[in-house]
Structure formats: C-alpha cells, structure tokens
Image 1: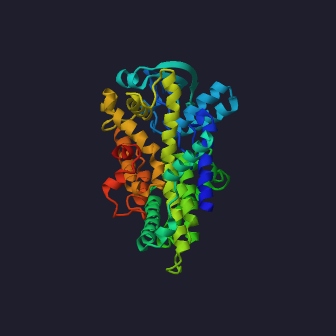
Image 2 (image 1 turned 90 degrees about the horizontal axis):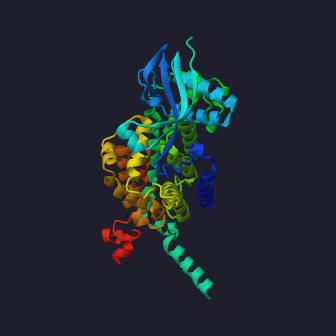
Image 3 (image 1 turned 60 degrees about the vertical axis):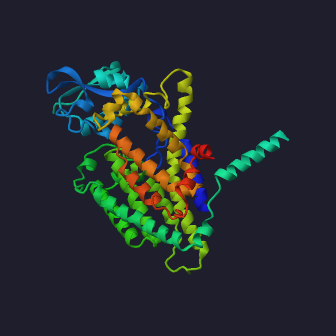
Length: 148
Length: 320
C-alpha cells in the first residue's frame, strides 16, 4: 500500500507545480516537468541578450546571443538562456542584488571580455520570425563586460 | 433518486475504467515474475550505460569550480565542500551504484546507491549544464524500485512477494504514463481560455508549426522536418492532435494492460517525431519506455490485435 501512497503523493506534488510562478516554467528539478508546452506560442515575449559591441567595435547589426557563435563560446547553452531569463525578471522586479549576482554569473561563465550587450524583452510571432527574421524589442537595459 | 443514479454511474465508470490489475493472479503465473525480474535488471544495466555515457571526459571540473551558479537542491552541498572532490564523488557514486545494482538488482542497498548516484548526477548535470527532463522518469522509477521485495531466497510459492514485485513494477510504468497524461491535460485545459479569446491553442491548425518554430529559434537549431511543417502547418496538425490524444489516454494503460505495448510504441514514435521536428531528443525517456513497455510482464500473447484495439479509448467504442 505504501507504493500506492507514493503514487498519490507524486500526483499531488505534480499538481502542486501549477502553483509555481510562471517564470519557473512550472517544473521541479529533478521530478516534475508535466506542463511544458501547454501554451501555443503565437505571440512570444522572450528574454534576450542582444550584442551590439565587441572588442571596442560597434557591430553592423545587433546579434542575439544564440546567433553569436564566434563571439560567445556556447551560444546554444540552455543554462545561459535560463540566466538571461532570470536576469530579465530581476531587472523588471527592480531587484538590484539579484540582478548583480545573475549578471556576474552570466558574464563570468558565458560572455567574453569587452562586450557591449543589452538585456531585452523581444516579442515575435515564431513563424514570422522564422521566415523573415523579424522581432520587436520591448524593453532593454545596456551593460558591458570588463575589458580586463 | 437522480443523485443516487449519478453516483452509481460514476462508480460503475470508475470501476470499469480504473480497476487495479489483479497482481496476485499474475503472480501465480510462471512468466510475468520472470519477465519482471529481467526488466528490473535491464533497467539497471541501462543505468550503468548512462552513468558512463554522459560526459566521458568530464574530469575537468572547472565548469563547476569556476562557476558562480547556485546548484539545484540535491547538490546544494557541492559549493560548501571541495567542488572538485564533490564532482568526482558524485560521478563515482553514480557509476558504482549503477554497477552494483546491475550486478545485484535483488539487493536493496545496491538499488538505493543507484538512486542516490542518479539523483546527484542528474542534479549536477542540470545545475551546470542544462535542464534535461529526459531523466526525471528515471529518477522516479529508480526511487520506486528501491521498494521491490527481495526474491532471492523467496519460496517459489510466495505469491504475496511476487505480487508486490509486480506491483512495484506496475507503479514504475504508471508513473511514466502519468507524466504524459498530465502533460496532455495541461494542453487541453490551457486550450479552453485560448479558444475563448480567439488565440492559438493546442488544437489550432498552426499549433505544431508555432511550437516548432519557437523551439528552433530559441535554440538556434534546425531539424529534418521542422522547416517543412513551419512552411505548411497543416502537415503537423493531425500528428499534434494525435499526440495529445495518445498522451491524454496514456494513463489508461495502467488499468487496461493489453494497451501497454501499443501505447509504448506510440510514445516512442511521438518522441522520434519531436526529435525530427523540434530537435528535442528525449532519448533516455525512449529507452525507459522501451524497457518497461515493449515487453511488459503483463503482456498476454493470447490476446488478439482486434481485442487490443477494442480497448483503445474512442476507437474501441466505434468498433463495438
């Protein structure tokens, strides 16, 4: 019967993930990821890191982090995406201490020296952006990594 | 009178669709328990393979020691000690725990170490590399299998222990399909307000195309069939709706055991489709489903395909 009890506890725990904040993607590592992809992304607002300057040179056009192979070492890092998302949220919340900590983690682990970048919220329709590359920048704040 | 009839109807519905299998009856048969023991052994053999497969050159621990990232809770102790030794300890615990359980699956202590090694490694991996929900069912099943009764010295007539063994394996299967069903429930529930407000929802023609495009853009990747579905959304629609149907009813396989193999095949094909369109691998989950569902101990080869299809929700009703 304790196995049945464990199953019931597991179900209750999984349902409880609905109470988690939206930014947490409703998952509990390493047990629950029941509610991935429940919303269809018709109009997406997503946190993004946009690079506009590198090594003292302004780039011809801003580049999204995930497209910046050659400037950053691991543009497809899921951990970097997570940090960008959390940093955007802490900036929105005005949480200075958390923002500072997350910026340090991001810059120490994923960004090169002498980088000018913006933490932004971009909005797009995925199919339109896939076909035409278009997105809208809603909010952004500018930062720079150290050159030393 | 009306209320009484409703309660009777609900009770009859639940009894018809969610009746627990008779594990004692299965335990009295010679084959199920043998198959179940082999599946448990295969699980730990696969776990051993995984423990060696991931990051075979992961002895450079700078990704941890030079990181300021706070790890997830099972590995929250890592920054408090020597991180290099902590990483080595976790890796060795995982490898040797899985080895012990693969060699001695009947030993509970070995299974406990296998679970501890797995949960620590998975947490370390997700803390410093990437979130990979692929391993969540492995953690859950590994935990449940700790509670297997030992059959090493059991009397061949110990039906009770055999029934408990089969129950634990059934619970492992159930915990896997439960995740899929809840995922489908989430999609269906979220579709209702989206439909009401005229927004895209999981049953929209372009739902699959939107999911695929967003995923490929976010990860800056491409896939074999993803671009085609984005260009022609109607191609993906029947498969997406079919996947929701498959996942929604997946939990029924725990109560309609003849469906286990069919649903297992369906879920594997679903993950293959997700890989070929969204570039989401879920390879570990495919392996786990293959181990536990393709040759389930509850499989009865005497049941015909027609009888199996008659138990498929909606389809079985049409066939009657």
